[in-house]
Image 1 (cartoon, protein in one colour):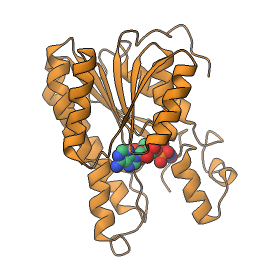
Image 2 (cartoon, rainbow, N blue to C red; image 1 turned 180 degrees about the vertical axis):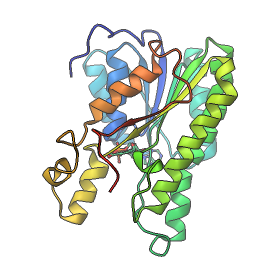
Image 3 (tube, protein in one colour; image 1 turned 90 degrees about the horizontal axis):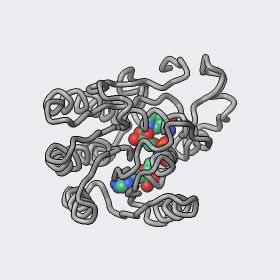
Length: 257
Ligand SMILES: NC(=O)c1ccc[n+]([C@@H]2O[C@H](COP(=O)([O-])OP(=O)(O)OC[C@H]3O[C@@H](n4cnc5c(N)ncnc54)[C@H](O)[C@@H]3O)[C@@H](O)[C@H]2O)c1
């Protein structure tokens, strides 16, 4: 993807991206690296993270792999501590990883409910709590959380996903209000349907096609990971100094069905 005149917004910045082995996270990692960042590619899937990091370095960018399970609180703290020890600063944290456990209240297992919180919500507490003091004592920083349009308008049959993503929205507002005066900007993006492995797995399950999803979007198609990455990069950059506590939808005007 071509990156324009803004292509050095992250020079000398260190950026941690979770879920960076996946669809949207890998696009975010690539985008930040192409704009000059040192990107820490975090994922529980070490092979996926390694592949993205190799691609970034192959293109002349700078990337490091951090393989850990976000559900382990101490691992979240450790990754931040190690990044700060290596680089002296952490400028951008993108809390992007997430899972989608389907089911309404009666269909969803207790394990599905708890795992959804363990991966979609709790790591934000641990990672942000570890990162914030470093950002505040350096020259500030930016945190971007990947919520979902479904966190604003719940879709049927996905109670755990809807509720955890609503928690990400509330967490974002709360954190922004508490720490804006320390130079830390906190924002969230709320994508609609984006073509990634998460969505493609759902297509296989339902027997629908990408064209079926495209037809539901007023814009004429579902979104791409690169389009979300461009928004995340903007929110994380110095081009958005007054964006703080914002929840930005990126949906092609699609309503939740
Ligand atoms: N794809 C969409 O249409 C869509 C829409 C709205 C929001 N989102 C959100 O965007 C984010 C990225 O979604 P995606 O579509 O790229 O999904 P994806 O499944 O392609 O990527 C998610 C990544 O998170 C990693 N991950 C999962 N559990 C982890 C754990 N315990 N520890 C560390 N890493 C873990 C996975 O290995 C994977 O690489 C998620 O938060 C998702 O909820 C996606």
